[in-house]
Image 1 (tube, rainbow, N blue to C red):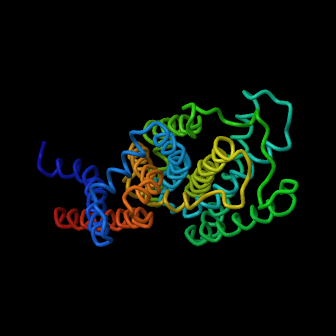
Image 2 (cartoon, rainbow, N blue to C red):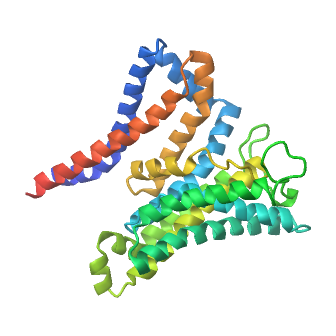
Image 3 (spheres, rainbow, N blue to C red):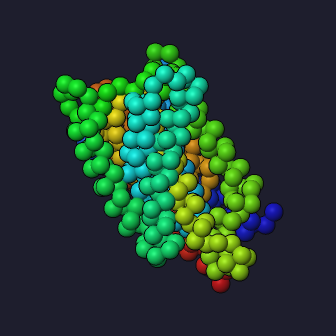
Length: 348
């Protein structure tokens, strides 16, 4: 194997790891400046989130929406589209599954659960299809439309849980409980971990097959790599963009559906604490790899899961965790720029 081939193979693997390591090092400096022990802080952070029973269950719970939404961002990126609307698609997916859980009663769980999940997927897919249609048929930038649709979705759900969907005598805006038959089972008794994480991992495997081993995956990659060449290959660029954005929205919709069906059992005004925006960072860190999305989603979920424990035991504010997430994105951006520069130099 030539030196050039080694560089091409190792760079995509090493750059995310270096970015994460660099972010943790800078985070350690911030912890030192705050007057705390970084070793004790990181020990509390990762020991709680990965090695304790309840903590690991909490990590899996937070990983579930991150994984679904990141897969949605990833599949859009493969087609050259930037789906910034994961947050809104989560809200719509949560709304869809809630409606099925509330207003369809008397079904056995083996029918009710898939039906509610399907509704969440369809609601999210419809929300993702809108910017896909606008981009494909009208040339409207998908970054703008997906970002603006986030605000519409959040405010739509807020209106519904404050008015027609609000539970009777509820002290704050939330819906009634969904039917028991529409709830996802707990997979780790005594923890918050539910079957949504298993569904997410299965979905990741299916998406990998779709992108890597199927004609549709080739079509999506061709459109993302060179839409002009894709047209010469008789691939409908417009139809592919709409399909991909709908699929991206549907995956994010499943994130919202599993939050309602597996964790909260009702629709709250604040469905997501920013999972849709974390998913953008996760997708970029994964470097286009479905397996990378799974690992990076686990890392981000562990940060979220152990943050409060770190604050209690080591006296370090949870804002350090958000700083580490931001630094990770910054370093991966630097790594991508350097990698691009190396390619230009080697090809010149």
